Length: 364
Image (cartoon, rainbow, N blue to C red; front, side, top):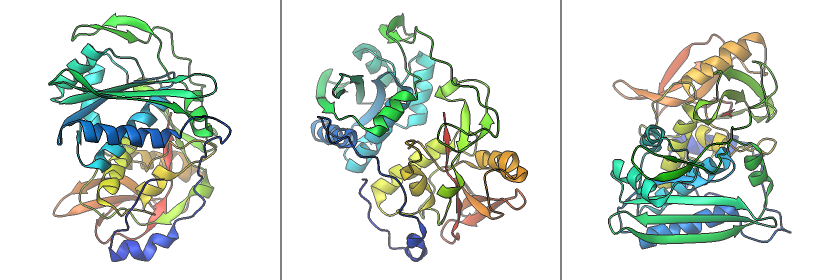
């Protein structure tokens, strides 16, 4: 469980008790040897913080596995742990994803050291991190490696046997992994890549029940970026909560952006403390039917939820305001909601916003 420090702000203190204690906890199989995945990730992050020079800019390039969802999980948890350690600076994921896309790499694909260092240099990073996750039968194998680009040496090589768990099984079953073919990147060097085709995601229609038991409200028509559909969480997960009180955190309102917005919130929450039982925290911690990749939707995503589901009587939504994950700035920082009684976007000064409805979404 992530360590949180309560923030001494009256608004949050008043409403912290509003969140439900029903958020599921996925436990490791006690009969399986090995350690918990999150514990291993935190240990690896601690070793990187100790063995890389303070203030080093680190790029989390890839974790090779058979599932893009599993690779994303490891990378995002490692990012949060490194930021919490406050000794290293983590390269912004948006910049990393852009460079990785330009160079033809996937986060879940294997990348050789030379190619990874080329990506790191393009980002101005002083160190890069790569890894691999594999099924060994009775346990999983996780390896994480940090390379100091300036000295061209391996600063940390962290291996661990990981116990099998429902959460890992769910992430692996989601698919979206890559193969082991080889190609030449534009930066030079040979890297394994996705030769076998990725199994097609089952076709869903708007309004269908999704894999996690929620409702499908968006289909972009292809699997670019590792996802095609957006699913709103079931009605019984809905809560009335305040938003996180902080300075400007995330400002991208586009469809699909809520995941990165929520990740940014969690980095700030882990770094600054506070934020427990707030809208982004609740969505990040939520587990429904084994799926834990929920996030607080961005404004445009929330408008799709309203127009596609709520206005057609689907999803048991209330005629109240729902939190979006993005912000804007005029003379002060503004938090956004969508009023599900009429579809209007409403803004609040971030220090005086009331509790509003929270319905998480996920992309797959």
